[in-house]
Image (cartoon, rainbow, N blue to C red; front, side, top):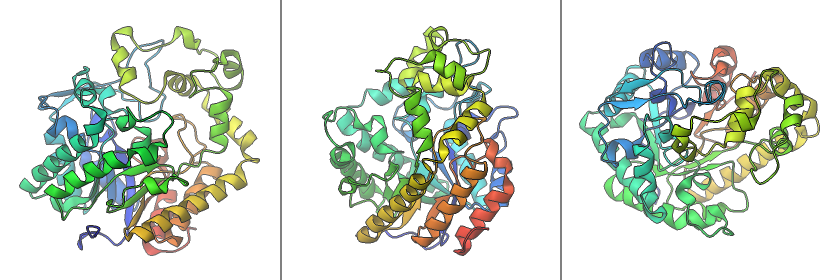
Length: 429
C-alpha cells in the first residue's frame, strides 16, 4: 500500500522550483542571499511549496567535510562560461556550511508556512558548481547498480537530521533523484534498453531502502516528460506520481536544426551565427571552459554546444526564430501536453497515488529569452495549470522558470493568477 500524504500538508501544492540554486547562489546580491526574502516573495506569488536538490549524498553519504563548502561559477572560456545560461549563471564564489544552509532553508520554510520537496540533482549537475571535483568523484565511484540505494540511505539520514531539529514536518515528500531516466543513474544499462523500464529494478531497491527507514514519509522518483509507452517501468512502490511535461515542439526543432544536443553531427557554426548569435560571439572551437576545470563538463549533463548557444545567442533572435516556426507546432504542442497529463493521471489513479507536475512546460531556453513568459509561453502556463486542475493533480508548478533566479519571477501577476487558479480549482484568467 502507498504511504499516504501526511494530513498536515496542503490540499494542493503550488510549487516553485528552487533546484540547486538555493545553495549555489547565496552570495552578495544573489537571489538566495536572504532565504526569508525569497520565501516571502514566493508566498506573495501564491506558492506554498519549494522543490530543491537537497544535496543529500554530499551532506550525508560522501564523508566529505561540508562545514565550509566552496561553490562558485563554472568559469573559463572567452567570457565567463554559463553566465547567460539558465540555472548556470552563478555570479559569486561562496563558502557555506552545507548542513547549516539546509537547516536555514527549513527554518525559513516554517516561518513562512511553506513546505519542501526533497530531491537530488547530484547525478545531473549539482557537483559541477563545487570548487573542486571531490563531490563528483565520490558520486561516480559508486557502482551504477547501487546509486539509487546510496541516495536512499543519504536521504533517510537527511530526514533523521531534520527530525532531530524538529523540522521534518516541513517535508512534502521525498524524491530519490530528479528525472531519473535522463540522469547518470542509467549508466551501465544495455544501450538498446528502454531506460525507464530497465531502470525500474534499481529504483525499486532504492525506494525499498528508504521505506525501511521512514515508512511514514512518502517517497518517489520523477521522470522527464511523461514516458508514454514506458509507464510500465515506473515503480509501483512510488508514493507520488511525479512527471515533468516539457513539450518542446518548436524548441526541439531549433535544437535539431543547430545540432545542439547531437555531437555526432557537424556543428553548423555559420548558420548558427547568422540565425541566432550575437555579432561578438567567438566560434565554438575558440570557446570552452578552462582546461583545468574540465572535470566540470563531466559533472553536468548539459553539453558544451548548448551552453555555447545559450551564452552567445542574441535573445531576440532566439525568440524570433521560435515565433517564426511556432505555427506548425502549435496544435501538436497543445495536444501533447493534454495527452501526457491524461496519461500521467491515469497511471496515478491506477496506482492509487497523488499526482504532481514538478517541472514543465516548453523546455530549456536561454536565460534572457522570453518565449516561455511571452504570449505563447504564458498561455501554456495557463493551459497547463488548468489541465492540472482538470486531471486532479495534487501539485504543480506555474512554470519551471517561475523562481527567484529567473527573470520570470518579476511577472507576479501571471504567477498569482495561476497559483490562485490551481489552489481554488478554477480556470485561469
